[in-house]
Length: 236
Image 1: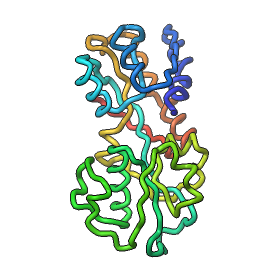
Image 2 (image 1 turned 135 degrees about the vertical axis):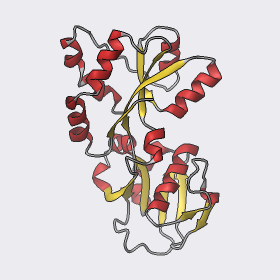
Image 3 (image 1 turned 45 degrees about the vertical axis):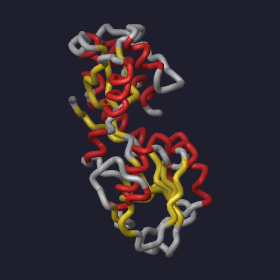
């Protein structure tokens, strides 16, 4: 995931403000919020709003987003084929199987003109919501992390930018076949810096936001990730 690299890139900027930025990595998606709610850390940076809202709801916590930093767009990647203009009948496409990313993947396929959906604006779509499939696409759903390894066995795959980076397949991205950074998905799934209620104006958080909102951070994201991670500047 790019979060550590983005934060590590601003350590010196923070030091220039007299603040030591200590970055602690976690191996799961629950512990960072638990540690934040317990006061063990001042902020975390790994999640989008739907994930945070779900955590707050189920844990009776009041963690708040303070600054949206980046979006990890879904893109279409070449497997056995790399030409969207000549797709054979029955071409096979692999997509993520978790509910959120499955819906996003189907919306991307629709935006590319490959399918149409009964309810294209909802993020609750599944393959059962496909209204038309003129190419007779065979859509395989699988865990997001397994998609890079599946590329040799399918014609295309829809993969998250961070997963593609980890899987070393960013060179297989098809130009122009990704989620629009201005799309509703980009807003909804931007990754935020999150704090406990009452710490939004803490001077350390303000310094962190300023560093993440710097030109140095924008340049780093644009250069390091080449569109697989997109800087988004969103305030909640």
